[in-house]
Length: 434
Image (cartoon, rainbow, N blue to C red; front, side, top):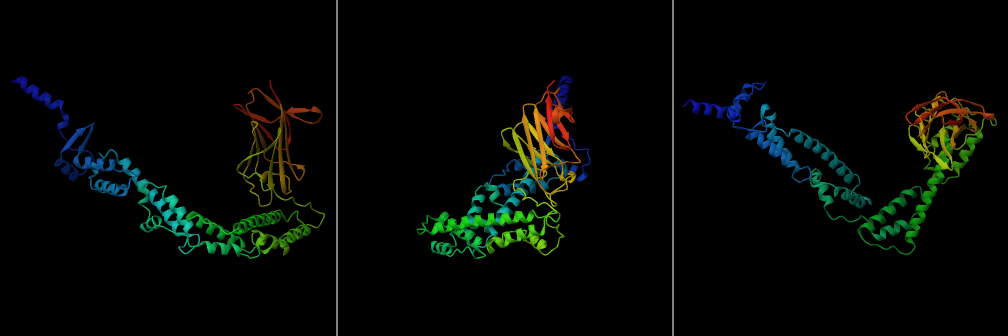
């Protein structure tokens, strides 16, 4: 009889999962009372009741690529919010539910972008068909869940059959009426091309002989107009109150007036030219200042990495030095020969000229020639220019070489396999391999 009592006691101790003890944490009396009426199952060191199990399963059912994503997410959120605070602690996949909520926010933003693009062109516009086709291509990249966030009206349009708001007769007429002297010429050319593209995407059209050549010639003329306007724009940008004379201003004014009215409207800084012509600046007299060179369109940009142009062993780059140039960012110039040149901010440049700074670096075996000039004069900075040499032996040293082979120790530092030469002026350097 005593043995039977021991066995019963052992059985009770061996199966603690059958005994439920109400939580003694900060849960309210109402929570504890509620749990006392609910059957718990012990599994993997966690207590579950049917409410918790249901929520865990609802969260597991959510798939953010399925059409049912929104409905399943709402069902899981509703069930979770109905749990007591204690029950919520046992929802082991709550992070998944939270991630799905963030996904829903992203899907709503994406759908809003599609709705906005579709609504950006009026249904009566010539470009309406093209815009719908572009939006439809984008819409078709979405998964089933993402599509459900797009507005019902947008979905109706994107799933409908759309035809262009034009015809071949209208396109031919528009092309034949193109006039290069009309102020709206560039826009007319763009509209004609857009209508033709819309027709061709909708059906196989064939224009009468010679009509498409008219359009192609007009497009070439648009390119020439833009190039001519760009030259004058650059000439205006090159004007400087410090160095430009009245003759320089007159030359730019003459170049602008030589443009056609269509080309003139493409010059964005024409009002800057007007300031010079109207005498806003006190310009130096003729002969007292050197003419500012035309600035380079391919100059390195401050704060950006620029690949230098290579010619044999020589690498070159250009930097525009203007009154309006960003003077607080460095220039990073790279080569394919394990060399990098760092030019400090133009605010530290001691030369007072404006123009195009020419940067050139040549490496012949262990000899490095570094040139930096502005208006054919060597530049000088308050801060150091840097030449970074990679893959040199750690014990290699660098000397500066002058005329008649005079040498002095160069100012440099070593970090790993990189040597950093610091100099405020151009010069020639020799790598000494110890």
